[in-house]
Image (cartoon, rainbow, N blue to C red):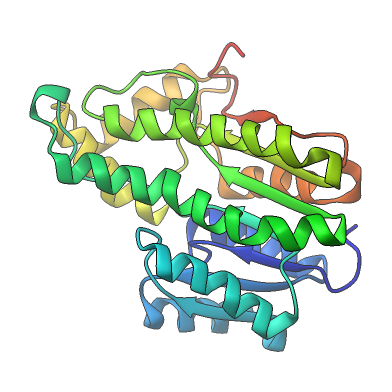
Length: 259
């Protein structure tokens, strides 16, 4: 159980994994600020989740430093502080073999996956350290532990880097009551997957169904994971029971990865 009135900031929280984590946090009595690029989708998400005054939406782009830092300011203004940061926003586009990969696609993946987590984390660390408590969870990927998808080199590189960033944060801040971990899901069919996954599949000469099927076949369970399964692990990490877990990269992948 979370302590009463914990404040969470979930980037990209209006849909997919971020939405599932947000719903789980609300169910535990947290106050939550979610972010996204589309105010209309944000408004719809707020209405559907029915969190009342306990949830706010702030628009912005995870690829823009000023927007990300503004999210932390908005959460602090709304609820007084940020106790829990879930760095969920992250993706890539422009899928291609490395010889054809554009500078724009590379830099976008860097900002979307790694820089966004750095900007948000940097902003919350000092206040968390001063209070002696904080929870930081990054949503990474099995591709952050392997390289199994041609044409997704940029995505893979920066998911690996996100894992390393979470470890670096844990090394520096765990003595101050702040834990830092990442979750590495296998393929989960979210709204974002339906967009980026189709692009990645096309770049690899696969249909979208073949692309998803290949991920399912790699698992021991022979099925894709769900957003609820990822959210359950996130809730462990931010709870008092997860206080002893830091610097970890935890798989929710149906047994895909060997470590």
